[in-house]
Image 1 (tube, one colour):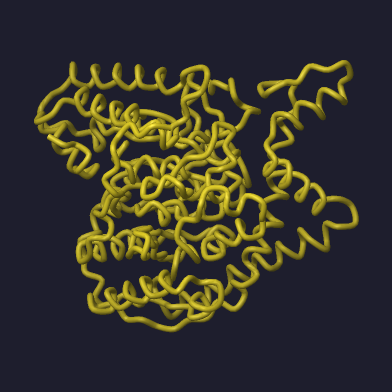
Image 2 (cartoon, one colour):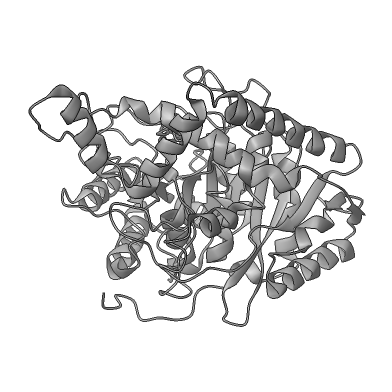
Length: 497
């Protein structure tokens, strides 16, 4: 039985019915991870963290099999899940893609991991990421770049590129990522999978290594919206351990996904289809909009007049928060330490050697914007613009239920192509950052390919706590199309490095 072709939901059903063992399922995906190490989707560092997690996964699978009774009630029984390396897992390495945390072992599981384990899911490895989630290509990792499964010369997107590549290459049926400015949705688009950024506060951030605390959000990544809903049913909900966690009651996301979208009002912001958008991406998204219309949705033109300022706003707000959050990595406590004669020198050398170039750039940008004499000119002004961007969405959602458009302006670019041009790299997030600034949920789903057979993503955005609507629309689209079922070209596993 080729388990790689089964959805997460199907795998849970097979294991819950006793048709396959959880040990066999875990061993199958661990073998695929080992055979496809050339993708560098999983972190496998000097301390052999992947082998350590693999052994823990096998042990958990054996325990589940030993205690098996027919018709298990746990919703994710035996399901292998890949975990972004910025999400803490107890007693195992969590590095956030950084030399600064190369030997950090978390004393606790993140809340989302704890909930997965309670639902009998099995974490099978930590996935590669841009250092401290700062990047759009997974090239900024201390552990080297991850490759796109559709074309190994191209990036998988970032910062959750390892999770996206793992799901796309069928190394795991699903994964967790985090999204600060598009870090779930952009790699989902580049790798041809489905990725959901929930409403800010919908999923606990407790145990997520912080980049920008008012923007970060944990979310699911899978081949389909149906499987994303399956994960959301487990990880969403209030957490007293996270002061920003919402008390708004959760829906059971899997319940409503089969309902029709007839009458659903979908807003289209035509400014998204202008300069900077690749023609093939625009055409694929337009075809997807017409598909949604043929399924009963109504397309309505909307305006988001301040969205053109979203990237500039984001790259003031996020670095300012990063500057504050990363000040804790000083070489004194739990992070990398560079030994030197004086205290000042130890601080400077530890941070200079422990952080990569992109992280240092953003810390300096944020520190400058927060410094005396510049706070009003930069951070305060960006905060006001953030409020205006949020108001644009609130106004638009008075007349529509969701807003649709491209996830990214292009398909996956070549590894190294934008490394020397930070601005062009930042513009890869032009369509995604606004949802984070406004705290709104958004989903990316596959809607086509370009001439190089690189995936194209459709983004749907909704009002706060409208995840059910997003998942329903995405699932109905996927019932009527097959883009999400398309895998990478058949490449030999274990391709030489």
